[in-house]
Length: 216
Image (cartoon, rainbow, N blue to C red; front, side, top):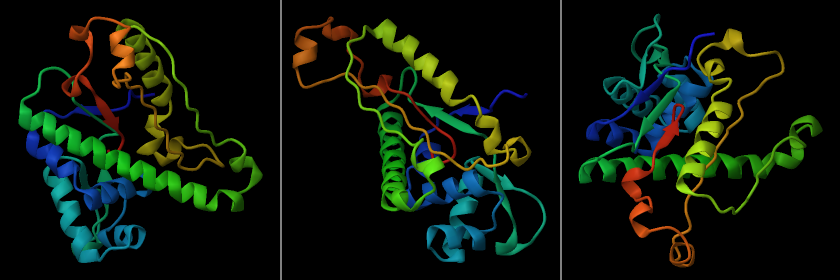
C-alpha cells in the first residue's frame, strides 16, 4: 500500500486560500465525495455552480485539487491532489502564523458544523452506527516529550486508512465517511504553568501544527 501523501504548507497565500469558509467546504466535498463537478459540489454545499466553479479554480491554483479528466466548463470533474496538509511547524513569519491560525480556525468551524449535523440526526441512524460514534474528553498531565510521543502515536492511528480517501477501490463494503478529530493543548489559565515546567518550554501559537485531509 502506498504511503498517504501529505503536503507541508509554508506559503502565506496558500494558507489564506485554505482559510476561506466556503472554499474549505468545497474542498471537503471533493475530498469526501469526489471526483465532483462544480454542479455536484454546489448541490452538496448549497451554493451556486458558478460560485463553486470559481472556488474550485482557486483551489486548483494553490494545488489542493486538480481536474480529474473528462467534461467541460462546470461539468469538469475535480479530484483531491493530496490526502493531507500540514502547516505550523518550525519557525514562521508573523504573516504565515496569522494565516495558519486563520486556516486552523476555519477548519475547526467546519468540523464543529459536521459534529452538530451528526448530533441532529444521530437518533435516526441505524444502531450499528449510532452505538460506535464517540466523543472523549480527558485532562492529563504530560511533559512536552510525552505529548510529542502521544502526538506521533495518534497521527499513526488516524492515518491508518487515509488511502481510502482518494481510492474508492480501497474502501470495504459497508464503509462510510467518518470524521476523526483529535487535539491536545496545554492549559494556559495560569494554574498549570505556575506549577509545572519552565515557561520557556511552553509552546506558543507558532509551535502548533495542524493537519487536515481536504478541508483542512
